[in-house]
Image 1 (cartoon, helix red, strand yellow):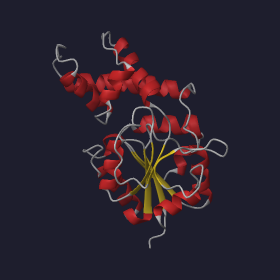
Image 2 (tube, helix red, strand yellow):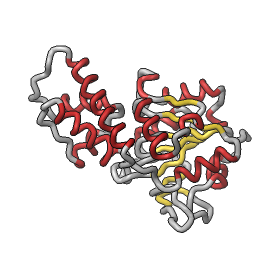
Image 3 (cartoon, helix red, strand yellow):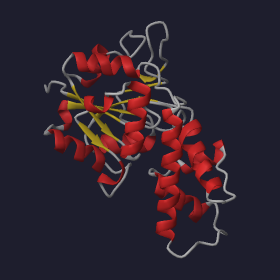
Length: 253
């Protein structure tokens, strides 16, 4: 049996509920700044989440929901510019403390650090977004807690491809049997399971009705003492919140 050595975390929707009131709002601010009449409602954004990656999401929107838009010459550069503006607005929101961590996140990471476990991030969001969230919502020094930040375009194929997890484990010199992943979405667990990782899922408002075949457990949140989680699938062995003991039991090592 392989001993658990590392925890690998998705970011958006997993560490913080960033999508509806974070990224979506930042996209809309970037569109307004560019004098575009695009507005991504909560319902529309839920549909756009079928695609991972912000630049990819803009292109998906144009291809499927705004087909009459007169595309400028140099569409790729246009999309990159919009996405850079969106990232700037999103980081400003994080700096203002508008996007907190989800329940249990800070506590569990502190437990893992105290136990000497290694930490990593595997996400499709940009490194700037990761840094802004960790430094503003967790701790000013939180970036140094994570041995590997696998983010953004560091691999060509984004989730649901397993590449981002495979890359992170390669950088750490670890096998899937020595790690466990934390996700919130169907695309996320397709990525982590495709990389061979045991995966704990905590859903959010956008992903609560998605399929999570192969998850070690599916929760509504990680929970806190006095703020219990709800088990949607799997066996928590009587636990009421996700702590390191439960993580190790689910991993099996």
